[in-house]
Amino acid sequence: MKNNESADSEVWEIDFFSRPVLNKAGKRLWELIIVNKNETFEHIEAIPNNLINSKELRKRIKQQIISAPIKPKVIKFFRSQMFNMINIALSELDVTIKPSRKTYSLLNKINQREETVYPEMEGYKPFMRDFQSYQTLKKTPERMPDALRGEKYLFASIGESGIKEIVDQSPSFYDSYISSDKLQIEKNIPGIIIFSERSRSLSSWLDSIELFSLDCDIEQKNVCLDCGLDTQYLFARLSEEQIKEAKIFEEEKNVSKGLHFIAIQKSIEKKEIDGFWLLKSNLS
Image 1 (cartoon, rainbow, N blue to C red):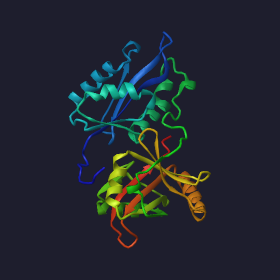
Image 2 (cartoon, rainbow, N blue to C red):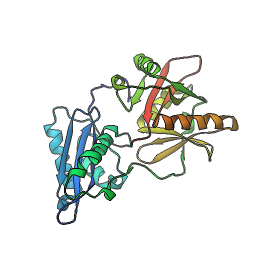
Image 3 (cartoon, rainbow, N blue to C red):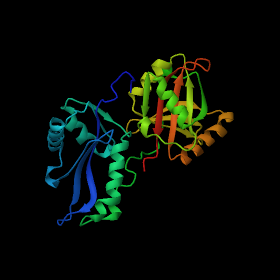
Image 4 (spheres, rainbow, N blue to C red):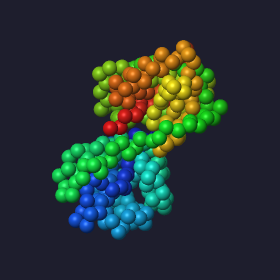
């Protein structure tokens, strides 16, 4: 998000889906789960099977917005299977809708309930658990707008102190899967630094697409940006010399459980960072 936006801007993350529990009639439990990004607000309610529709969903979300002490400005959801119903339900509400896999607080809540709540319920069926429903199929990446391509990039790594130094610089565009005061990193994490004379424009565009992760496809020799629910952009092609670095990047990303970063600045000489994203692609 833009760093001149209020850090207190309320972002809600919602899920509306069936759970691994059957009632006495043999029908699955449906729940609406709402949490905010800062994990200071949550609402969870079971929805009768005969009320699974966008109109009912809109009514229940609207009730929560009316009663909430801080109204949401943005509502995110990750579940592509429910895109139409959730999108229709939110379309008449005074919020910005963002389909996104960057619903970290929501997925933490779902994982917690999968581990500790549903197993204690009568009718629990472990084989119906919602394993990695946020993962998407591999697809052919789209081309990035030519005007927004970086002239140069390099693989790098950074530690906790380095990240906090960047946060203190207040880049024009900054986003993180976790607030900086909760950040705890034992080892350096991998990432890339992009150099571009159009660094502000590129940062602004990345900020607008719900950037989720950077992935190196060694087999296809592609560097790709994953964003939104299932969109992938081709950022660059790997040269033979870069293959080794890309393999190390992916290995270190795996060790750090998906944690990595993207930084954008004008040039190697100009150290000011215009955009910085601390990303986490492993959400399990």
